[in-house]
Amino acid sequence: MTRLPPLPVLLLVEPQFVLRRTIVSVARDLGLVEFHEATSVTRDLPVLAARPFFGLVLDCDDVSASTDLLSRLRSGAFACPADMPVLALSSQDDPERDAWREAIGVQDTLRKPFKIGALLESVQAMAKRKR
Image 1 (cartoon, rainbow, N blue to C red):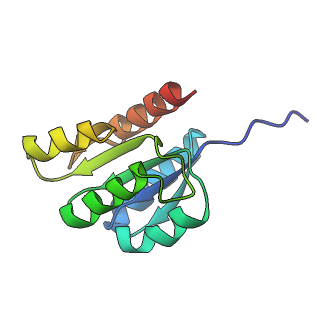
Image 2: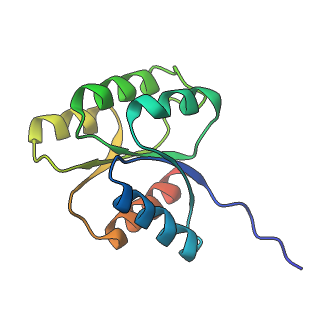
């Protein structure tokens, strides 16, 4: 029996239950990545402090919390590498915030609503850049 290499583990921070579960289920079914889930930035802080992840998919609609999280991540405050790939999710169209996220190293921003396929393509691109 051939063992497949372990899937990259990403942290998904998304407050919307149905969207979060859909993302996790589709990624698992396709064997692309494994997601660890959190419903908010507040709930994911202990997880980021405790273990490393391959990447982060972050809902950025709570601007203050996501800004703080990204700043702390890039300063090396967590168990993850400071340069960990990040994909932002947002329902707000704000070029100023998009520019800030880009400057701090967010690989891409997807606007809600988005197709799950678009998110999975971004996650796969993130994996290729990290290798």
